[in-house]
Image 1: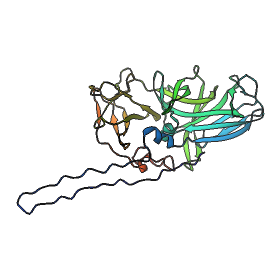
Image 2 (image 1 turned 30 degrees about the vertical axis):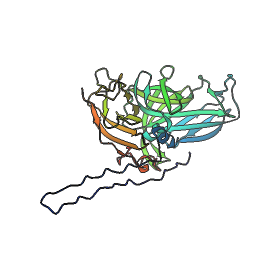
Image 3 (image 1 turned 45 degrees about the vertical axis):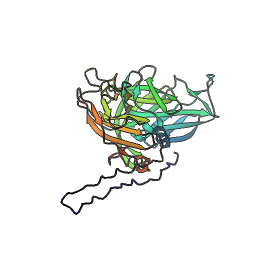
Image 4 (image 1 turned 135 degrees about the vertical axis):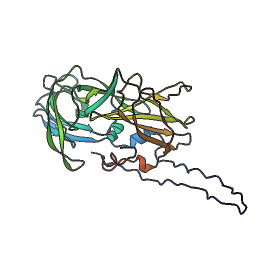
Amino acid sequence: MKTINVIQTSGILLTIAAVSFMASCKKEIKPVAKATPVKSSFYDFTHWKSALTDPIQNFQLDASKGGTIRGDRGYTFTIAPSSLKDRNGNTVSGTVKVELIEVTNVIEMMATGAQTEAVDGILGSAGMFKLEITQNWNRLQLNKSKPIQATVTANPDAQLDNIEVFQGRSESDNTDTVIRWLRGNGPRPLFADSLEEFYDSLKMVWEKKRVIKFELTFLGWCNLDAYFNSPTGESIQVKVSGVEDHIDTRVIMHLIQNNLKGLIDLNPIKNVKNPIDYTSKPYNLPLGWEIRIIVVTRDKDYNLSYETRTITNTQGIVHEFKNLKPISDKDLEEPTHRNQHFDKGGLYK
């Protein structure tokens, strides 16, 4: 994997004017100075995301013999002999390069752009990865009659009743990269899952994880997802105050429901007279769900600030965010250990 570059932190300087009292019976209180803005090394939202490290792992195998590769998080893939083809449909032999990205937490979702929204709904992921195989820099294809035997580890309590296989397509513009999810050309068989002990090479601990086995018939981005849409639910509605002159504001939902993972941008509403600034429409989520909202904004002087808290999805409620605070590099830097911030507050919780 690539070495994670941790951005050096800069402190937040708070300057407060002293309060003085006049010698007379009347007391005069001098105005209190505002907190000094802190310019982050990250000058916009996209620059921050691009500084996060893609968790890429590389392997080699003999295409004629096939073999099994295992990722740091316990994902395993058994590739059958002579199952790889070039773009002309010819069976490939010789050494091939296998690239694996396991996406298991919110940092990795942000870094890769692999959020959990399909073209027709909001998703919750039980397991997400990218498996790409190349030879001499040329991407290879998979013979669908010889599927890869895949194993994905998930939360032990994840509800898998409505899990489907989705295929991802990477889309990039001048500012960002996102993965768009489509059902993977029809349902794929998911084999019986079980609980097993796995060694997590990144956290360096043994953990009991849910093991989901299935046949993979395509290469590229893959996601085991369930729809979170609720016809009887409510859309998430958010208002962000005090950012009218800001250049860029993003509002993100971080979902951890049914022990599945989700990360979705809320849609901005263009009508400035509307009391709602961001919404999950046209998709609804069940009432009563607890959802973490992350607001990140940049002002005209390139200062970044954010606010994050957990809300409860309630009918007719607009959730207002108005207590944004400056972001230091420490708030934004990628943890050297990818799980250390999750239960300690902050942006990556």
